[in-house]
Every structure is written in structure tokens, then in C-alpha cells.
Picture 1 (tube, one colour):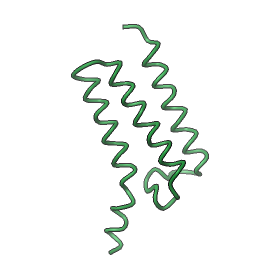
Picture 2 (tube, rainbow, N blue to C red):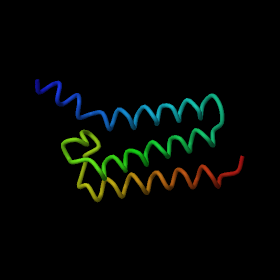
Picture 3 (tube, rainbow, N blue to C red):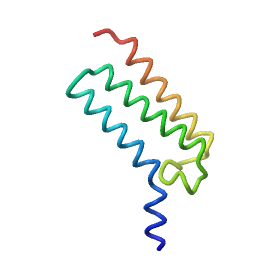
Length: 89
């Protein structure tokens, strides 16, 4: 039973990784700019999930304190998005 609860608590990380993988596929096979923006969205999603979920529900998104994790993930997402928008083709 503990193994099932532990697997269930990893859904935020799995969802973020799935979106990030989608962004990498878009980046590799279609348009790099759109892929970077989808990847930035995945990191932003991880930040929002970390901000809203409890420490236990966040699973492996819980690394340090909630404020640090959320700030780091959202700033990283913003940096990726800004770079994806301003870097010329």
C-alpha cells in the first residue's frame, strides 16, 4: 500500500516531465522556438504545481522549501521563455 501511495504522489513530476518531453520533441522535429516555449511552460507548470500542492503531494518537486522551489522554477521558466522569444532565428 505504501508503494502505491508513493507512486501516486509522483504525478506532478510525471506531468511536468511529459510536457517537457513534448517540448523537446517539438524543438527537435518542428520549430525550435515553439519547442523552447513549450519546455518553458513545463517548467512553469512544475513551479505552479509546487506552489499549490502540499509537500507530500508535490513528491519529487519538493527539493527545498516551497518558496525557494517555486521561485527557482518560475524564474527558470521565465528565463527560457524570454530567451526563446528574443533569440533571432
